[in-house]
Length: 640
Image (cartoon, rainbow, N blue to C red; front, side, top):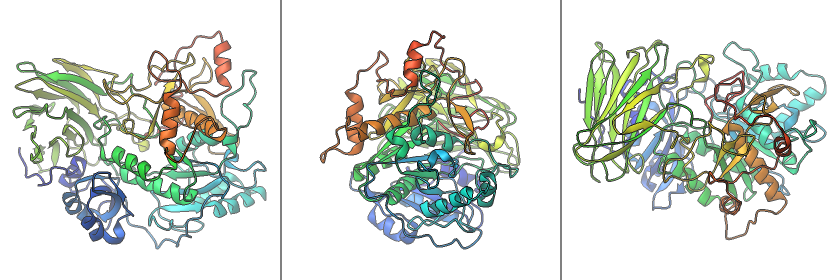
């Protein structure tokens, strides 16, 4: 059943789906809730948004990039006025007037480098993140974006306007209490930090593990003799941590992390100080996207790093190579591409698949059809041409609630290619409207049209470890489920450093995601295991002294970042006035010997000697073992 689509072809299709559902899939969008936007627009739009918008930076093409926080009821209007928009997880209004934050303080004037992590869950009292005498923190600031500063010692960071922050002085005051005998667990409860839905302190946190791998007092790898690895210079550097919001029990539909991620880079620069070199690790990511560097988030990061020439960002490639989440194929005249998409009966979240078509390949007559398990369907023709408008087709329930939609965008509107977003309502829970089972997606064309399909990541942390991820059960026609192109949505940018995981034999781990044919290659591989018996790396849990294991590119990326930090500090990476930090690191990696897989192995850990000498089998860790890639054994954040 056709429906009136917004006039702007660049209107974020995920935002449109939330609008069609009257924002019922978002806890933070009702009433006076606000929505974060990553915006590409002009000076007039930025000026009209006033204090709602961040300071802008150039997109390199005559426009501006900026983030904005707007009421949900205004998001549609603003998005329609922008060139492109990605909307983020909506938030509830602040429950109380937040305390005023202090002006951001610079890092130590003599700091040669600051290390930063954008992730979820920072155990800020951990000994791993303290000075050598354990009495002072190395953290210049911790910003939790998804929580209001309801009480001291939390404050709202100046210049950002939302979330809650603890600066170095506040953390040092907490450590003084620890030195006087206070229990870390008690302090975390006072801070309302790192608690689960039942109010219990978590044993481990993804971000804590990642930060320890990248910048803990000692490298996490063990030496060949079995003892701890020797301390290194990276374990002395100042740190910054940004905790990005995660969907809660009432947030069930899609939203990008782009606005939060770019605000995180702004905060890191404020805390590190102007001009101080900063190396940032991001071990988070989604599955879907154009995977050619043309997403708004990737282009905004690239432009930000063009402007901030003293910052570089490592990102995890992803762990999806063994999963059934990506299909590549070609729809031909008389031979359609048909995908069997399996939705689970216990899935309380919306499910999404993105179909991407090569620029210029989607001629008039290319159609996408969606068939439900109970025999209903909708169909849409793909927009083509520079002036094409957005299009959509919907299936409604008996009460008028949208059950499913095909939301089409022409080439250049959302990414370089044309996009059809397939959106389906939850199969379970309070918003249950769709039938579980096998959904069919059919692409037909009058001529050969390459198509790539990605199931969007759907692993909310509040499901208690129960998998709700949909998948492609089969692909028919000239198409197949493929590991090529399984990299995360952040792994195709121009300026980022993309890191895959290596097994103990130094070759790519079987689960480590691969770029698409002709796509941006990985910059390096880094070890993600330290022995042949148990997958993953052992690193800090929440409480000082606790250790947990986690594998995958989530630990490979910070491991690589740590090695790059060492090389920066000892002068092995040449950084000059004509090269940005990101360019210097990319050129350094490009000059290293490359393996048969095309990526150099970046391994400065003592464990590499152990691995070479070990006679044990070198089987890569499976994504379904206890220390599953991208997560500790006892938690399940949506991570790379």
